[in-house]
Length: 399
Image (cartoon, rainbow, N blue to C red):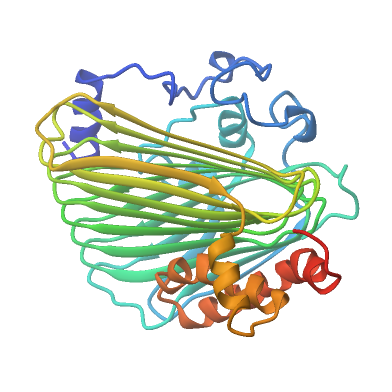
């Protein structure tokens, strides 16, 4: 019996019913069309999903893809039936994920060989080329495997205009170190509904960096579990919502093995009328997960009037034999004391606001450990600020 089969068997014996993360199913009939009253859908603007949650056609291909990988990393686009889907343990937990599983006829596979150490990141660039927001939605599937004791960084970058729903499976082998960076910098009319699931092996480490700037509606569900003891998961997120944007991040870390760790830190800023962000952080600590450590944190900075940020951390604990578990959540405006301190030392209001926002994000950006990405993200934050906050400061208005 393989490691994956062993873990699956263990989970079958130790099911914990949770309304925070429903039990999955490959059968679309098991996933009713959501109404918006369900716990996992109550924050999402269903009317803006272009029918992805119901029966809108899937299977379009309104995009151009470009993959750049260092020598030794194997990438391919194959028939989904031959892609080894399901190796991560992903089982669709909502209707859109189930529809995506059925509709994605091709799968992108990325494999990091055993004991391979990549000297450069793998880049997967997807540019939407839809001529209209009403073009047929695209369903895609990705299987990313880091074999035992390998080390690599994989960067997904999304730009352009399209309606996309995707399932991404990630398998981190024993002792491997994998960083995955996902950057959504869509055009204003794009819709992206993403599902990511990672299985982390014994003594392996996984870092996920989720960056969201563009799009009309972006909703990401990211889940993780463990195939053995000693695994570590870091989930970092940065998002910036403008007027009318809906950005939603839903996280679920399932501690399925002892002596595992998880750390979740997401930071977001909002500006403009109707900007909306949602962060849901769920952690389940099972009976077998003794000696684990977990912490989750979400911070939101409201830059203008007319914004709304929802932040909901949740812990479900089935054993008291843990090293530590905690969470923190905060939403607030500019820190008046920081602004006053900077202004009293001759810093203009515009520059003071810029410095406060950069300070809010910079600590998180530095943890990405990909220098060229860090520089581009700082520049993107600057561009987002210029849209609203700095203009208001220059005009003498209130932010």
